[in-house]
Length: 225
Ligand SMILES: Nc1ncnc2c1ncn2[C@@H]1O[C@H](COP(=O)(O)OP(=O)(O)O)[C@@H](O)[C@H]1O
Ligand SMILES: [Mg+2]
Image (tube, rainbow, N blue to C red; front, side, top):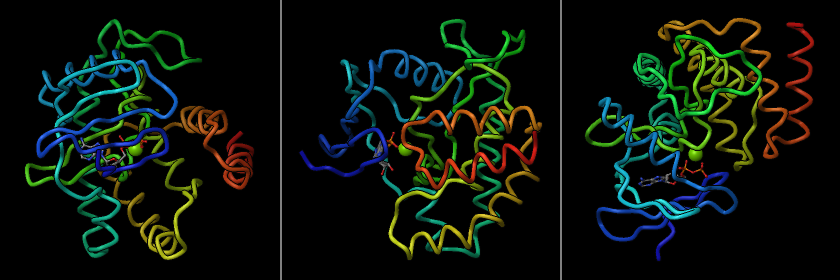
């Protein structure tokens, strides 16, 4: 099988022209993730169609296109437009009521108006296809307050430093502030200090977070304490 994508948690293989196999290195089961993707598709939200699920594996529609990060690196002058697209994907997602079977965000009291949150909806999880942007990687999705999704983008863009080659690092560094500024103007829900603190804590608890990132996150958390 041809490996066509690799993220922090999953490997993605081409099965044929139309389908991919997405396999967790550690993780799963994928039943709830697949159920949520079907639920979102029923609400006309752009996700890849799910064909099959088995343990750590999902068979999905194959998407053709680059991630929003890769597009931004190739066309920095379009960064504001990409940021608005990202905000639009948040705004649309946050109109969708959370289904009762979707787990809530840990540490928050049950709300009466919970929405679907992705909690990792950043430019690397958006594929820019010929039919428009499509959102992938739904393993972190939970029910809760939309502002937490917005806070998770703030935290990611401000404090996280992915282990990529220096030239990609430099490109990301140049895009970070204009992207975040335009995103926050266009997104509807507010990331309150409480929600930013919660988003920081989620990153601190994530086993993929590096010591350097943790130091930056703790400094930030102390500043808004
Ligand atoms: N349905 C798909 N069609 C084509 N490529 C995909 C698809 N889903 C994921 N990919 C590729 O695999 C990469 C990692 O996928 P992702 O779901 O984000 O995994 P992770 O959870 O490990 O980040 C993506 O950046 C993309 O290049
Ligand atoms: Mg991903």
